[in-house]
Image (cartoon, rainbow, N blue to C red):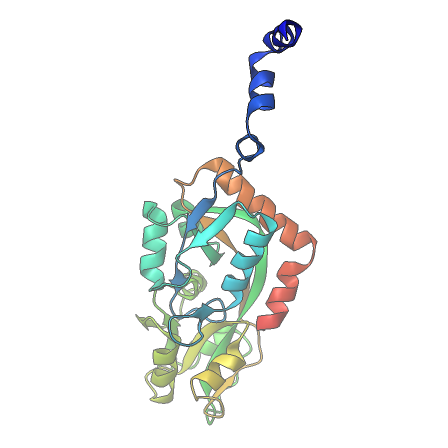
Length: 262
């Protein structure tokens, strides 16, 4: 017995603790990291109302895939709607940690950090009333429609920044939702509606405007969307999220999810 006690006494403290601790304590899992976010109103197919108290969409699928790739990360708040302007304001202030599928602009780079690979690419089209004979090949064609050349965009969306940079376009950015802008278009309160895909045809079908509104063929602008994080988010947490996104890009999961919602 004495020899046995002497043997244990000779062990380093950390090794003695590891040997004497119950397995459940020695292999305690690392704590789950909650990433606060919100569902952005009016941004389908990123976020789509799917019945009472349920939100689905491309970003919901991407967040669930991230949680599968890194089980230590969990998103909180993705089943709660917020206006886009408020969601971005809270991301900037640190009330939220992340937002999914944000278009990178100079103004937004000042407010947020952008991480990981591009989630997917978007293409902007102009929408017009079905009976409008308008033909557009360039932004000069839009300018030539004056004085009947008002282009509708969603307030707080990157589309407004895009048109401001292009210049010379009469823009109405007073409405925050796709539904309202489509109704304004049909009522003649704008000649064109500038919005991005994927999912434009599904948007028209959902809003009952298919057959009343047409999508003009030319791609007027294209961009890539990324995960944006609060500048206050811990850099190691951001690195874990970026690594999970890289994994999803390399194994083709991001591309598969984009095709699902196109």
